[in-house]
Length: 429
Image (cartoon, rainbow, N blue to C red; front, side):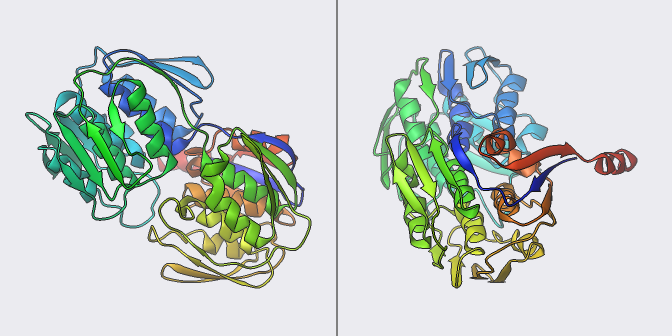
């Protein structure tokens, strides 16, 4: 019912602060289930996926208390429920992390098949393969995933494909298993390291996170901890590209520069100036943007979650760029919306050819998923005229107070209620 209205053409200037990482927070919150004492999570982003995760814990019987806007105390010690509420779980992809956490705590779990962004076929077969290797029995009936194990036992787990979700779920289940678990062909993203660090802070024994082999020696007890979620590399990258697209000069704060290296490297090739500091990064443009080719890959390659944003930037560059999506299918749903704004992009399967047009124009568009929505915001900021973006609930799944943060650096963006949509929904009900 809400939409973003953007009056484009304003350079972004000033400082902007990054929130905690969505992809870390949605795994750390279920991980609290493995702990025998209360935990406090700091730098928690104010996004709908986090709200849903915390609601799931609350509905299952845990005590959830916000100590301030970004700090939450969770006490799941008395929780006896191993079934995740259906309606909440189906609203987001990351609900599957409750499978590993509940299995690790109770030896059983019941969670609906996950929802989330429509990015093509995203099976959970590698998750189930990992659980089976730990001696859990798995079944899927009526849209529910059921797991049960008399005793989780450490094992060798080889993932057929590099999967962030399967790697993290295997870690969650194995941390309370008996014996040693070795995960091979593991994903290496920063949020996997963050999950390992959080679990280790509670007394787990995990080695090798951030490499393709993770070793986990199971423990019988995890104690409480106070832990801060890492900064969100995708939010930081989105701000970096927004600054470049508007010809701005922005200092992005509360970041880990090393996490941004794949993004920074590609942006430099496009002609963007970047200066790194200890926990911030400056982006400015003082010349023309030029073409480049991008292929998304698992970390440390260029992240798939930044593909729509950098494609948008390349519509403003000189020459022809080629974007190859190496992770997900159907990640180019936003291209039709960019075409409404004057972009010249052709798509063939997992490859998009971008002819730089130099300038976009405002238009009414719709966000088809989280990162596609971020790309449309970047396009609207850079475009001439007014852009209205509908279905912004996708964007709010992963960006905390995005419109307010952008206004602080000079963007003309407002979140407005759409009365027509409200009437149509009321009539439909």
